[in-house]
Image (cartoon, rainbow, N blue to C red):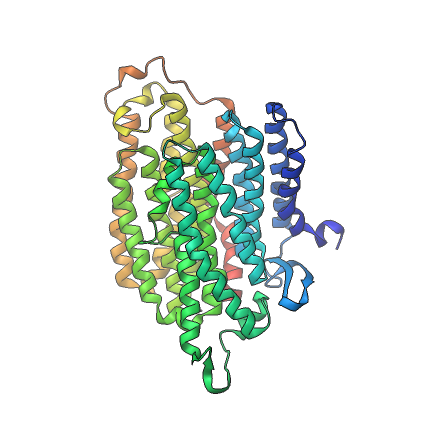
Length: 505
């Protein structure tokens, strides 16, 4: 392979960090140069990800484009990265949303250079989680992604930003503490952090006397299992660990909410798929019904919470809890019946839902930001009849909302149908109950559209609101295109996901 092929993943991973360092050399008062440099730099990983997509062989090895370099043999950890079909879709999503979020941030006026540096560093943290094949390296990137998002909320957020950013960091770090201890335990016992080896060693580990740390080995593994589960459940987030999310979304800047919903929530779901199910197959099956129950509650309570909101952004935030619940339901289906056709369909749907939710949730948060920049309010009761004044914005909002609703022909329907179809065969009761949440998904979506676009025109907005500009259309257009393409012909991405799922499970 050529240099690009040998180091493609490292280039995708570290170009944003290199660009962030170069950005520090640009004078902070050169705002136009800073914005365009950041945008162009963020487009390079996207171009490389597209190259990666076309070079990836779905029928090839489980992990491809693997790079490994031992940095400190004494701790049995190495720089080890690689990609499979599941991680590939998440890398493509991350590298797509980052330049769109940066373009959406061109309206930021305060401390622009620091803002862009944080965004580029955040991209490296998120990509590292998807690419890492070393458990310790996975944790390092997991933590790296927290810091930039904390400062983005704390420095450029809304009026209650200090509370929201502190809650975000405390919740996620609380989960990370148990995760780190469990990772250290696994590394000490097995003498490796290599994920590909651990998948073979850890599930079947047997010690003389079956005792570890003075406790039965089964007990130690169950504790480590729950440490992983809690850390990832907080990140998804699964009810009842969800309370940080609405506050973080509400106070975050628009682009921060786009990335938070579009990618950061997927880190938790990816952790379930990449680590929990392969490392703890017995424990996953034992507690699958509990996970399915929490997923069902997230679907129902997320929808009910969204329906009860009058803050447009908070409504969209609660909808993320609802939609990510379907991802966890698909994971639970695979946990209880690994390798079966129903479980495979559900898992395919879960991974596709991660990608699809990243598209329409980022679009919805962006559209909330568009109207907020003009009206300086997110109160749904303050709008009314804006379709007459903003027909382009109204049409875009309806299109994106219908994807979130799950309208056939758009991407949200494909993934949610696959999860429901697969989970129905192995988790019938939970799947049936989750339909309550699906009903209220339609209710809160139509409520938002009615209050913003329809009904009597609020005369106050005449002359005070303007249509979407070219920059804003450039942000939303790629998302709309992918929403439609996946909704009409999802085979190109489902095939890549399906082959990876079959290799893993």
